[in-house]
Image (tube, rainbow over all chains, first blue to last red; front, side, top):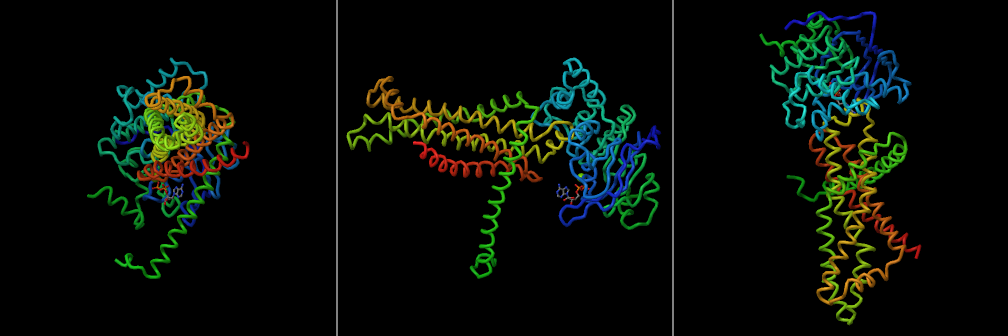
Length: 257
Length: 269
Ligand SMILES: Nc1ncnc2c1ncn2[C@@H]1O[C@H](COP(=O)(O)OP(=O)(O)O)[C@@H](O)[C@H]1O
Ligand SMILES: [Mg+2]
């Protein structure tokens, strides 16, 4: 279950965030985020519910706009980017939603086809089928191709959601609580899938979670979000080598001994 | 419970509640207005999503077809039946075809179609987009290179704006047919005489006004349904609220528009 050595390029930052702040009304959610994501790396972002983890990756994918600070994604500064450039950038980023966000009026096949048909003008039927089968194979769910999302289990929905983002060959993957609400065995399967995606598609990923098993299994590096800032960043063991009363309970709860 | 007494305090809080409801309502109208502006800003820009528009037209028609057919027919029969006694009193049953046709074409057909469509189509648009919002399907579309406002909202609004006038025309014909059956049975009027008498008092302005009404109603139902769903709040109860809000708001606006359009059409006569 130990993580395979990843192929990380420390000279190549695919995401670079500096001094990022975001408030909603009076609520100051993110209070100065600095973050680098290196090519090929799995970075786990830990934090309690409501600390702004989802807000952070929504800012990265351009669904929300920062109040202050800079976000650089794949060489593009998000402040001042045109709408066209943002669209082009977005399809290089895969976003796995917390509840999978499958289109429930469409079959699995249609779900997977949708991003392709919409973004690759003039793609042939044959190419579409090849791509659909390839990502379904990657997530191990070829047999579900004609099913509706409502017929799938939580774990299967997660996988199809991930497959749907993989079909556009993203360079960056953002996972929002990929194991939330799943049973422990399915969690481990999803974690393995995240690692497989890293190897097979050579992606750089941010994985949001509060599941430390997940953090340990998939993270090359862990960053802990506390009070709107990354207070502790490093390897899993480095992050938890502390008596900080805001960090310790996290660990104690997850690994009761 | 203290709340059941009528102390000055509870009265004050009730007044405040009413005031909030009213200002909330006007705030919503303003937001719908902003939503309409956004619609017109985006609808003329490519991509035009023709396929999706056609699919939505089909959905709009199918969703309300059965109920609309049934209601149209029954209204035709009932209205004719109920109007007969008053005309008999004046010995004027021969006016029945004209009376029925005026009522149906000028008022009933667009209004009844709109109310049924608000219930069937508006609510399902609200629920559909609401659940897509709540389960982040709209966000998923946005991050995967499809503009959700264009793909989901513009297509549905175009579809209802285009389809509801067609449905209203259909309702008018079905209702007239219902009226004809009743009249043929009771007065023995022939088909050609009925048609002649039915269309005699109807002017082009009337037909245009009715169609214009149906277009406005269709647009309203589409916009309100989409607005409610698209801006639905998180949580499952948000979906129910969106569906319900779509029906109530659309019906209310349809009545207001009915009054306004009747006024405006009056100036052209
Ligand atoms: N679009 C929004 N509008 C207003 N408040 C928001 C919005 N998105 C998130 N928030 C608020 O920001 C805080 C952090 O949210 P989120 O990032 O979803 O937390 P989590 O770390 O659990 O993912 C929450 O308190 C939430 O209410
Ligand atoms: Mg979250």
